Amino acid sequence: MPLPKEQFYTVQDIYKLPDGQRAELIDGKLYMMAPPSRIHQKLLMELSATIRNYIMKKEGSCEVYPAPFAVFLNEDDKNYVEPDISVICSPDKLTDKGCAGAPDWIIEITSPSSQRMDYLTKLFKYRTAGVLEYWIVNPAKETVQVYSFGEKEDSFQYSFGDEITSAIYADLKIRISDLL
Image (cartoon, rainbow, N blue to C red):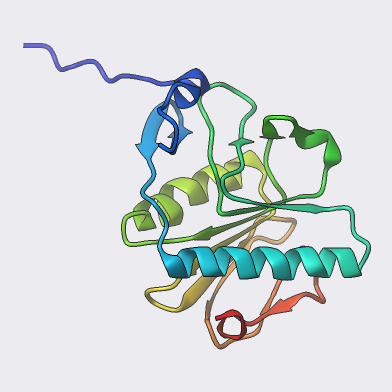
């Protein structure tokens, strides 16, 4: 008996989902998204505001977009993600539909149901797509894993009480515990 054929999806399938239902698409595979927790939303708002306020104060040109915000990572119809926070410094990547290509900095706030996706699948996809900096904020463990994919690739793990410096903005320092 032959194995069942695996189904591949496209961005058009994402747009056909019922209102309120969110999913991401990675290499043609559909991943449904659960509603976020309260702490997730608080971190999302506070981190977005902190980064946005910093950019505005420095009169920077980068823009901050919290989820839901469409990112077409490889500019194809098989990859569509909604990172919790996307920082985009190239205005030519921004379209009416979202971001065409890799944001400069992505932050994911992980949950028990999304850890495998955030720590493995997205880590690989973001790195290979050209994301320069990737943070995984883990409220359950109170840790932040920071990946730098620029000229010098590196990875560090911080606790919520540590001061974290962005690789993109050397003078931006964030302590997650101050945001809660």
